[in-house]
Image 1 (tube, rainbow, N blue to C red):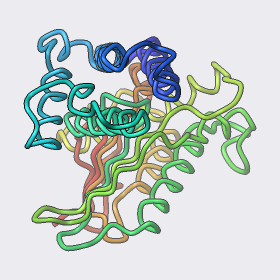
Image 2 (tube, rainbow, N blue to C red; image 1 turned 180 degrees about the horizontal axis):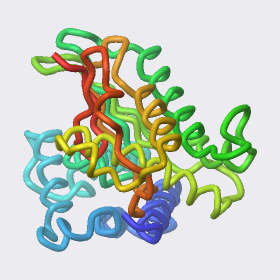
Image 3 (cartoon, rainbow, N blue to C red; image 1 turned 30 degrees about the horizontal axis):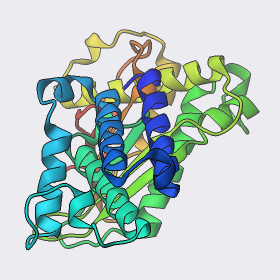
Length: 293
């Protein structure tokens, strides 16, 4: 998703909120319902243009299915007709609920397309996701990103303010799925930090994340040490050590993450396999990490 897609998606969310706060200012209930649906279609197109262009009726079909599931005794009619006797608050609440359900469904289809940074934690079978486990992993991820950025005289100690800001990601959404026949999962959708953007700092963070992704891909692909594109042993070792901090623990069996920030070609080597010790291994699912069996 491009920055323009993010802007459009955020705008449609704000406009839907404005419409539902005072629906009568926007016309009849029929007009409001159609406006909200059209805004949701625009949002879906901005988030994932390819699938939406291939199936332009997806949002409308999901809406009709939603109405049938929630009002099985009612005829197949639009919401304004089904809730003809309800007040504006109840009418707006249904449209808000559908927006949330549509967002969840879109996220589950491919969560890695929806945000700047997505981290998915898969827990051991029967293990319930704990708050301390996923918040602890996020904090370690953030520290690793900061440490991987540092070079030269700034390789140790507290990072500069611009790097701290660039790695202070905002939490857009957190989806916790308890074990239910399948392993429990936690999905964290992260965005850029709040505040003034620093292009140089963002680029350095992007390169650092790209480096860690490349390490996972190389380790999972079985490449030879000779395939490493950089001969700088110090840089290679420091990066590998930082990547080891992201190995699963605390009941977490596997980790997968991607970063739209990491879209530039990496300029540092992948992790030497000798660094993957103590029965752990990196597996490349865009940046997947899992414990060895």
